[in-house]
Length: 129
Image (cartoon, rainbow, N blue to C red; front, top):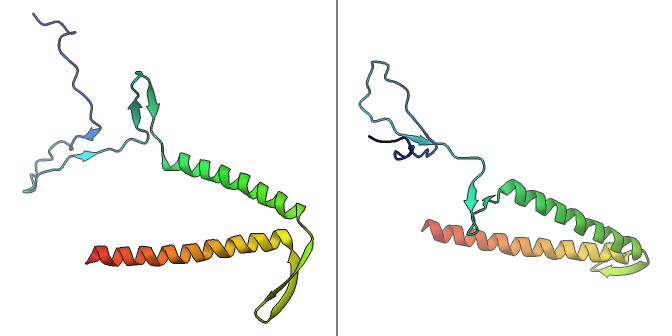
């Protein structure tokens, strides 16, 4: 006699079962499709379950960090409003020091992005070969 406790329940894998036969059988076998869960659970060594990181969560953290950095930059600009004369090639203008530093950082980031983009293109071309 087998008790209910001895027979394990079949494990659910998130697979979708194919629809019932309609009477018309095809020559190709029906493939099982797996359903991707929206949240993955991880069992930690101490036995607790936790939810895996997601792109949405990482994006939210990045947006909060960007907002905090933006506030620090705004404070820096507001505290450095003294005008400074700038000579660049044939241009001559004056801007607040905070704005000049911000524009310098933006120019540096654009140069870095350009160099990085060129390197990514090189790597993609090499990977295609």
